[in-house]
Length: 103
Length: 318
Image 1 (cartoon, helix red, strand yellow):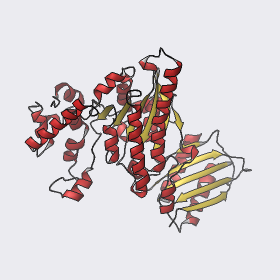
Image 2: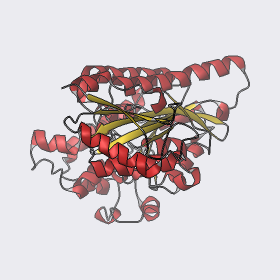
Image 3: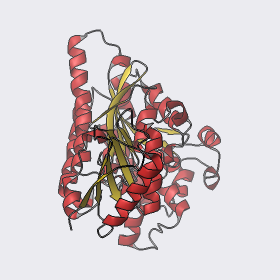
Image 4: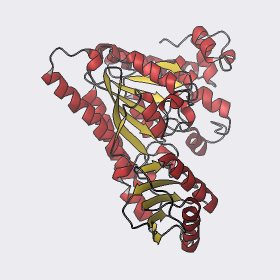
């Protein structure tokens, strides 16, 4: 029952924004998560690494991440997440906060 | 990014470990060491399948207040109750060690150094002590922090700040007690065995952990201030804690030694007199001890605004 690591390689439907510098937001509290955003030369794509105790929700993670990218147009970024049982709504909210804090 | 000016009025009890660390030192002066970007997470939690944090729940770094270099350790209660494991413990130990080494280096190089220019360590506690998932490593870390506190003694003052949600309990209660100065807010709580653990072990008749008023008048800042376990009681804001730390910069190491609650035969004797008093009084409630200290309206102290409380309170002397 080791921690579950999920890695995704995604792209926003339309690339609009990238980051000036790496940024870290949030705390891996109960039902919460922390997010690290790092600018990276990924030819417009976004890599995502999620470390979580939760298993069985990989497709849902991919959908939430894709929704975030489509909404914001984030590109050329490595996203790293330490999750502690956050719900999809909290994940999306924290991602938006992380991006707002990074810009 | 976090705005330093906004942080100052931020309620200390709700501030995250990083907000406290940044806000306690001068604007823009905080440099985090072994921070989240170094991605040093707990190997034990990973094996157990429990969530990890990039900073392992402890923020460490260095900044300055005026001319004083300040090494900061700040614990994050929202990550597994601020528990101290192997990584977070190592960060604490090495931050204190860094301050001591820096002190020695400075003193060797500059003979005419002001007290104000010598480093100090500030620890913002928010923890229940050892992280049970990695208990052996966590306990060892506690011992190593204690060891560093002893090495710092007489050279680098160590100041404890207690005003966060979780309080300072368990092994870290011991560590806080072993520092030179303790600054608390009235919402800070300090103790060894936490309220819930006392209730679990001794029963609800002995201690009702769901009675918040009882918990606060037994472990809270006002009680600890009356008992002399806390040196200073301040308002619940980052600015208030920062101002009190700032007021302590430049004091001689002898002045810090004087503020310790333990650590000399005279202080041990005073502690023993307090134990004898407790045995003699057999108090059923903290307010009985407050009355004994000379407070005629002990219950009235609880709801006084802090400034009135500080102006009126009599502290226990044994």
